[in-house]
Length: 174
Image 1 (cartoon, rainbow, N blue to C red):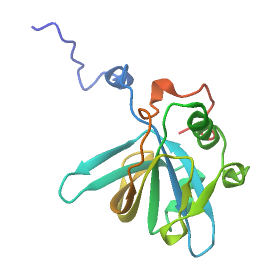
Image 2 (image 1 turned 135 degrees about the vertical axis):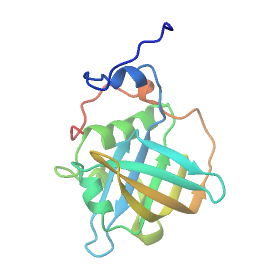
Image 3 (image 1 turned 90 degrees about the vertical axis):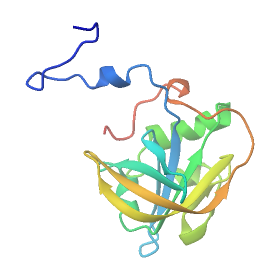
């Protein structure tokens, strides 16, 4: 028997052990519902490129989050990459520790309307606006498969990661 520990399917599995030590990039996802004018945004850690050609990007939003409820009706979403400097960390704290159910996050930061009315954070150095191709049930989150329609590569520091986040309590527990 090798030294790796295996778990019988009958036992309780502590899945968090598998991802312990990973340091994922963090993103701010924004959405707008053209029908109601509602806009929302949240800090997201579950996101990844899913295809090279054609390029596709997947972002996952918690079903408990206001951003998810707005994104359900949105045709496009914007995915913002934040850096590690102070202003970027403040944006992460705003979108990660406050809920749009209680405050207007966009009244507390600089932004401009993008395609489909989606808010684009002017303080973010990179963003991708993507047309929602599919919504996928992925457990307690819903995955939004995006086809890029606009990309701003910008310049700047390394992306903000889970381990470099400022200390905060989530606006909504996932």
